[in-house]
Length: 470
Image (cartoon, rainbow, N blue to C red; front, top):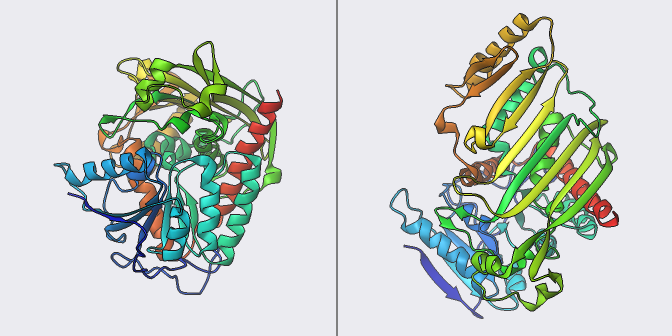
């Protein structure tokens, strides 16, 4: 069971904080890293956990992370739900965790966290409007930050984020966002195939009507997570606090476009040109709102967004942009609840000069993501197929044993993926956490990570600005 210690005005005994990394994260350095990979040297500070992603960081235990986590938050349902999730992980029958949560409640929770420095890595997942201020305060205090997306939801927030990254660099800190979708096996296969010229050719330039790369996703306000229906906080439905869909979920989609189209390449803001953007609301009835939040009525801060008895949530968005001359499209839709037997879905296509690499997750795929390869050439198909077989059955299968190419039609193939790789969104949090821990131990991040995080948020916040004008 979770050891749970409430700490109110009494001061915690400060644990040794550390600046976590080389003087300039993301660059090679000869200086020794502040972290060594030793057991328990990473000490987590969780600030104002308001999203279930905060608990998913702790779904597993890690030798490098100390089991005691210091939590600072205003007292209320958000932190209570977070603690209940941790208790569930600690008490489960299969591989229970052993976290001890030491909590401080009070209006001064943020200042208390910064004064006490009871750890060296701040975990953030919650109200997205406050997040950039938590980030700024944490790095100014010399603390590393491991934060759920999105880091910012507005152009004003983006300006603060640039300053925060500058501070993090100066102090040798690691500020990193949690990009779980890079660990989805279908996306990995799509990316790996796109890097093989004999199979993919090269990414076409594309047009607004037929982009070189598209990412589309459908999500739901009311859905199960970790075996239970997720309870949404009321502010989740307020786009001034959660952010519009065009700056929230699209963070993942823009990240994947950068990660796949320009792998390991540092990008800059001038590489981005927003061509068009639009947004529209999802209507949520009072009954649906009660289902999702367990609240009897719309709170006062949402009432101005109610029309015809339903809350109008600007959770949907779409934009088309160019990245280094390649046309890309991003689209996100939020429905209230998925039909029985379905769930969140994802569609992606990369168009190469030799083939198209497609991920679908619809009814035909039983709502499980699947990879398809569709040749777009007529001549040299035998040579193409031989290269494709080698790429999947040998090259990629060396990394992921058991993958197998399956031919469906003359110019269409799919990849048979063993179930052991279909671990799902929640398990991906563990993979991102392991990646972050490796960064801390090495004392550096890849040189492209920080600039590409900035380009990502520049793209989403710029698209929102255009959508609001249309």
